[in-house]
Length: 91
Image 1 (tube, rainbow, N blue to C red):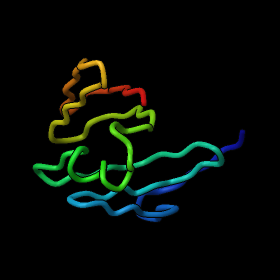
Image 2 (image 1 turned 90 degrees about the horizontal axis):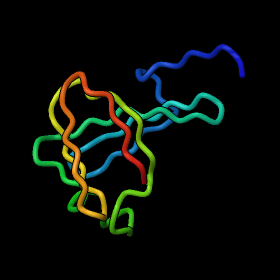
Image 3 (image 1 turned 180 degrees about the vertical axis):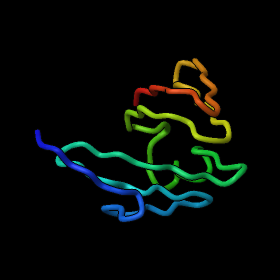
Image 4 (image 1 turned 90 degrees about the vertical axis):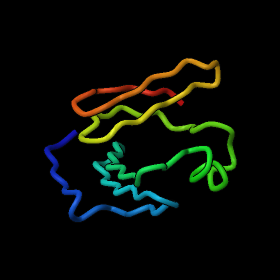
């Protein structure tokens, strides 16, 4: 461990997806992403064809700055997050 600072204005790399963008900053083995989606973005439509999986396989820990996002797990459990919400979504 060491003191580090990175900025989203200088991301390690950027992933563009249909109706969205993910700015990625790396701090050694920790990855932090800033995800921005256009209205109407849906994982099942905009990312599933790229990922090639039925559900997202990444673990997400985050905070919602604006807008709303609804997630549904394979077992049907749902969670909706909005501005100010801190959330965790397993793979």
